[in-house]
Each structure stands twice: as C-alpha cells, then as structure tokens.
Length: 281
Image 1: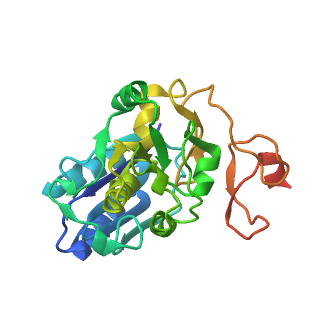
Image 2: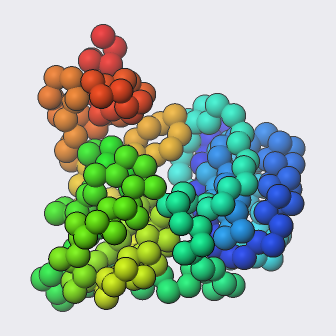
C-alpha cells in the first residue's frame, strides 16, 4: 500500500543559471511522478512536492546531488495522495516575491544580514528571559486568522508584496528597539523578511528556524502556538495535535472554524475562512 508524503524545503544559494536548474528539477520530478510547486531564482530554490514515499525519497536524493542543495533542511509531512493537481517548476526574480529582488543579497552561507536563527527551544528561552519579545507573522493575513503565535503582530498583508510598503509606512517603527521574532510556514519568507527589517532599522531581529512546521513538530499545541497551520496544497490546513485550539471564525456565520477554502467572499478574495456547513451551502 502506498504511503503519500509531502516535503518542503528551501535553499538560499547563488545560482548562476536558474533556467538550467529549472529544467533539471522538471526532468527529475517528471521521471519520478511527483507533483507540486518549485520556484527557482538566482537566489536559490523553494520546493514543496508530494507523492508516494518512495518517489519523494528518490526526489530528495536526486536534489541533494547538486552541491548547493546538499545540506537542504527537508521537512516531511503526511500527504493524502492527491495534494497537488499538477507539477509547476518556474524561474522567478525571487523565490519569495517581496518585490525587491535587488535588496536581497545571497552568498554561499545563505541570505546576507538576515535575522538570528533560533530553534523552537531557543525561542522559548528568549521569551522566558525577556518580557518585551514580539512575534511578527511573516505570512498573509488569511493564514494568521486560523493560527498564530499567542499575541503575535499579524500585518494586514494580502500578498507578500505588501510587507515592504507596510514596513516603509512606519506602522511598525515602535518595534524597532524590541526583540522581534519573525515566523512563517517553513521559514523561507522570514529569511528575506528578517533581512529587510534589519535594513530598515529594526535592531534585534530573529527568525524561527524551520518555521511553524518545525515548531509544531517539537511542541505541537502545548507551547506558544495557537490554532491550525494553513498549507499550500489541497489539505488547506493541518493541526499539530488532537487538541488544537480553534481561533478562526467563519466569514459567513461567525461560528468558530479552522476551515479555509477557495470561496469568493463579499470583497471578492479567493480564499476565505469559512465553516464546512456554509461552504457546502
């Protein structure tokens, strides 16, 4: 019987020929039958793919053969077998589209001047030691509605491109002297966001290494995380335990829910927090 798995990883490393990497990744995935989304840029690679465990293991092995990707931090999760409708491998100016490709500097060690990386345990140590720590959500607003760190700042970002204008507006200047812990799904957005915040005068910036995924694997729902995690596949959201807190509210009826679906709400957005009953109607 097949065991569906999903892997999520990114690597920031200079890629002189992103198109060659794209063609190679496309060939590897197509030959193995894995599907998902892969973005390649001159800054590196961001990949989320799924398939049967044997196929996915072979994909990971093949990808690690490229020297720049040999040490990729691979995050595994259980799939359903139908998590991605197709395979998409694209070259873009940025592997995370903040809209400022020339501000992002990458060398063989990753993003230059990013935030200090903290393991989940080190985040707990920081929170215990300091009473002025701020969690800063590096995801889109819809994602934060169903899950976030307790007390986190959740910017009103509809897309990742919104973050730089929000930072430049001065809306978060009052945080510039406080310890700020940025977090996102798997860590890739915070690699860039933390460096952009440092460039704008935030003095003490950290990033949750491995993102919410790694934190959930270590602490589940018995730490500082509350709610469900939005994911970029047909599952839409996942819980870390059987006692996950429900913090979302249905956009139609107002009842508690962690369910997100493609559903045009009253302002025309494609994604909405909506309970299964209202979605069915």
